[in-house]
Length: 321
Image 1 (cartoon, rainbow, N blue to C red):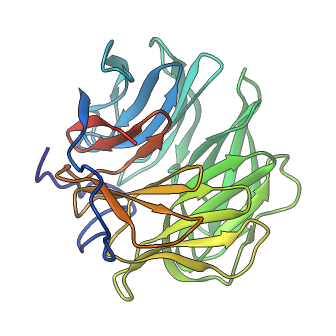
Image 2 (cartoon, helix red, strand yellow; image 1 turned 90 degrees about the horizontal axis):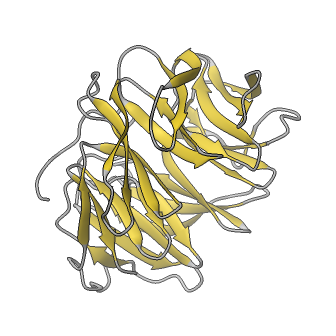
């Protein structure tokens, strides 16, 4: 799984530069299992003993939504002939996913977990890079051209509502929904990590001062919002904001282009697309990150449960914790 490079993503979540600059040890890098082949996956979601993932493909109509058992069984496609599928979530027997072509507009769609007819929920969207779920609703990000908003619809079907606007020179890159909270990562000259409420009350507000940055992905604990900061000058980092707002603190520094995040207790895992590796840092006792896997082809999406599940450019892999 070496050497493939993905330059097809609309906003940069991977790219040039080294990763894991303050590397500590190596926790048995290479002790992994390939569960299924993949074609530049962008989103991953674990549920019901399956790994669901989006295959972005070339960005043309060769994308898929696919799944494989966490033991490598029953691999197959849920939906095919998709243009640039990106984020993904599963609830109520349905797979929800967004499409985010590098040029043109995308949308948000649903399909049964076992496959079937793909139903559009909202189309003609730009910036549909983030998707989140709570107990009753699906949420997704929208780039309005003059700011960011969030779309939502009941999981069982109903009217689409656009809520939580925030104006400025910024575009959405990722989303996390947790409890009553919605957090949106953004990029641009007025970028910030934004916070809003799932009930749509009020508008979003930045957790800290807006600045020219690229926040690429988010992970949440009960007290902290962790975000990747993709920037060559200074080097990229992973930072943590108080959930209630306030200044960011560095968690990991010296990363060329950090990829995606997954939090498991106090262990924060992140992918390094350029370096082909997966790393972990204990946020309860910050120290140098430890490499848990290497030799991967542009690893990007990551999820953690009984093991670490990662989407590399050519496969879905399972890595022991």
